[in-house]
Image (tube, rainbow, N blue to C red; front, top):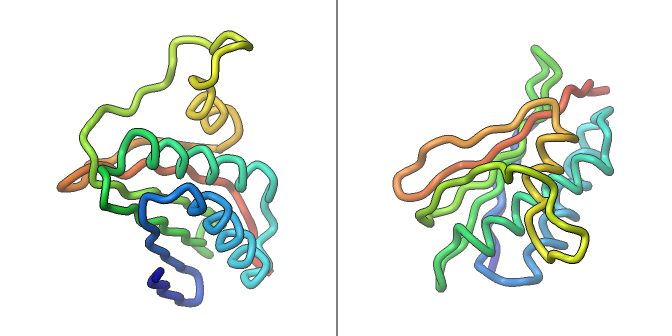
Length: 139
């Protein structure tokens, strides 16, 4: 079962390494944005969430483990921050160029870099945190 924590401008959810986690996280984020009346590019946010979670599932979450998604809205500077925490090894890097149209992967972080206002990678023990931010306003 998934554990969920909810505060006024902060939400967090944990999911196991399962394919169904991506649509569940998208729903979780969409509901949080609606509850917060967050004026943000929702489609861009959801695409970035999908890419970050998919990358974590494919490259960052060892078998039998899970990932944590943290979502926060900072009213002081109207910034929506999305963080995906995993416990896997590996280095996150932006591909040198867009993948060929017939290749299956290689576009995820390039999409995040193109759509989000900021993105990056932080350390975690074990693992890493991949994050992105969007300028937003709360109503």
